Structure formats: C-alpha cells, structure tokens
Length: 372
Image (cartoon, rainbow, N blue to C red; front, side, top):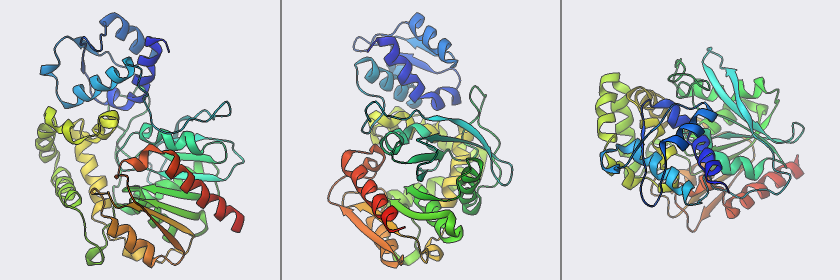
C-alpha cells in the first residue's frame, strides 16, 4: 500500500485523539521517517488539525508518544485495526450519524450492514473511540446490521473544537442512549452486545427495556455486584481514580498531569494505546470520564439480574482487569444465561474480534435466531 495511504488510514483511525488535543507533535525517527510536508498534505486532505513533526521523541508526552508509535506502525506496514476482514462483500460503515438523547445530549452513532438484517447493538467500553470496535463492526456487518455509538459528552461533531456538552451522567441516562440510537435508526429491537463497562449498560437495558432487547451478550463485564463477587486490584484502583477525576475539574487536572508521563504507556497495549489513552487526553475529558465511567463502575448491577432474554456471558481465566468472578455471578443468576470461560485471552483481546470470539458470537446469534 502507498505510504501516504497508510498514513491517512492511521490518522483516520486516530481521528478522535487528533481532534481532541490541539498542538500535538509527532516524532520522525530513522525507523519511521516522516516529513512535515507529507504530514501536512495528509492532515489537510482529511480536514484534521495540523501536527508538528519533531526529530527527538524524548520531549513528547504520553499522548504524543502514543500517536507517534501508532503512525510508525502504519509506516512499517502494520495494520491499524484488529479483527478479520470480510471479502468483497464487506459493508462500509456509515457515520458519525448525529442523534439526540432523551435529555438533548448530542450523540454520535454508526451503522454498518444491510438495513433489513437482524441488528446487533454494540455497547463498547465507556469513553473509548468507535475505532476500538472496528474489528467487531467488520466481522459482524453483513450477516447482521451493526449499530453503535460513543459515550455522551466525550466526543464532538466532525471538525468541532472539543467535546459536545454533557448532560446527565448516571447509568439510567447512559442506558437510555441505546434506546435513542435504536429509535433514531428505526430499529424496533436488537441483540445487545456489551463489552467491559458496556456490559453494565447492556444488562441494564435488557432488564428495563423489555422487548427492545431481544437477546444479550456480555463480554468481560466490569460489574459492581457488592459482596456477591470480588473485584480485581485494577478495578479498585480505577474506581478510586474515577472518583478523584469526577470530584472537580481541578482534581481531574491533577490526575491528568500524572497521565502525561511517558511511563503511562508501559501499561497500555502498544497497537491500541492511542485509543485507550483517549479519555485521559485532556483535563476536561478526564473529568467527564470520571463522571461517566465512575457512575458505571459504582453502580450495583444486581437488580438487573432478572433479565429474561437469552444471554451469552463471556470471560477468561486471564482477565486481571475485570474479575472473572463477576461474569460467573451474572451468568449464574440470569435465568437464561450460558457462561463461556475462555482458557486464555486477557481483557483487551475481547475487543480484537479474533476468529475464536467471532465464531462464539455468531454461533450464539445463530442459535437465538433459530429459536425465535
């Protein structure tokens, strides 16, 4: 593939991050040379803010380093998104499509696949760019129509400076965003697929929205189940960070200063670090992330465990991010749940949409459709 096209695809993949943080610098190194002229040409063509090319990566902060490494991977010919590609019939993803939530909050949603196909509503991890789920969208679009959206108040319209205003941040409002997306796209009911904190919203929708949720799959859910299931050290630490960031914009700015350190990237998977760092990229985003994700992480999911839809619950023995015991508890209490504990694969591999997990999802969906 032409180097400029690879660069353009990598920048499209990182669109949310590039737009969210003004004045970013990118390092050009011997292993990944990049000229200011070529970068200006590509960002100009895409309508993205200008990025400054520097020769020394030592002075870059965490977001700049994550983006530099992402573009370097593209320059080396590595793929910019995970997941199996479909042959000639692959469906183009449409979006962002503007949607208004019940309280007027602006949302950005996407749709891919034939309009007449059964719908899969993908509820991703709070605060993450839609590009993180590109593998799932590509894998499922065709047999299904896949719809998804980004967290309220965390993203702006294309070309906008900063995120859209944030209305309410509670779990009920975030769950209601799913229904707003289904209404806007004229979808009467959908299979709802939740990943990480998105599993909490998916479960809440199944319990409260009745027939709008025809079936349910919950992948590596980040649940608060009180004393019914333990939480990992990561969950406890993350919840404390969210509480601090949510307390005030000033507290969020203090946490953001810590997140600027390059050492932060050591704990993030290199190929998707530019997505994972997005909600920490500015003090405003981090404050809103604390409000939204903090509400999800501290919300007791036990009242939703009466949801009667067919459900697939997936975890793995290797998940040290969201405790597998939470998924086991949810599967044991849901009336029509089937639990799958994968022998390997950490929390983030669920987002990769590799062949094994795609087959698992498609098999469940096929069984549900046959029984309908």
